[in-house]
Image (cartoon, rainbow, N blue to C red; front, side, top):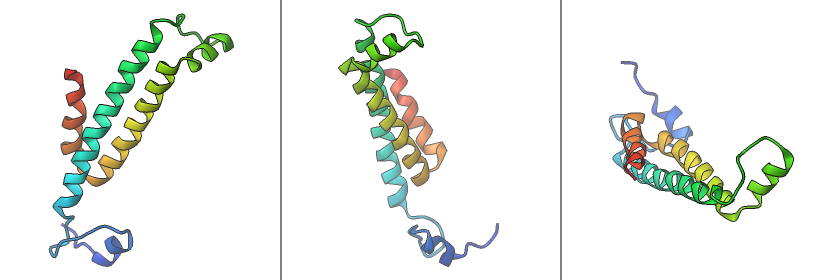
Length: 110
């Protein structure tokens, strides 16, 4: 194991314990953000599904794309889905993937 230079990590703004590792606060916050990401992404998919019930089959034609972007349910779902993806990136920056991924996978049960 290579020694950790605490000055480099402190310059990046990471909180370190005496032994040079990250504190548990970062991992707990990462878990919370991952849970919020899972809720946001899954609610986004539900909203998009609700929005497509009144819309034509998705095709890459101008009028069909404008119709989708004009649907408040579909646009809200897209926004929630994108925000869930961004929160996933934040969660992965705070906690290891072995902790974040199972939390994100819990949305499959909904």
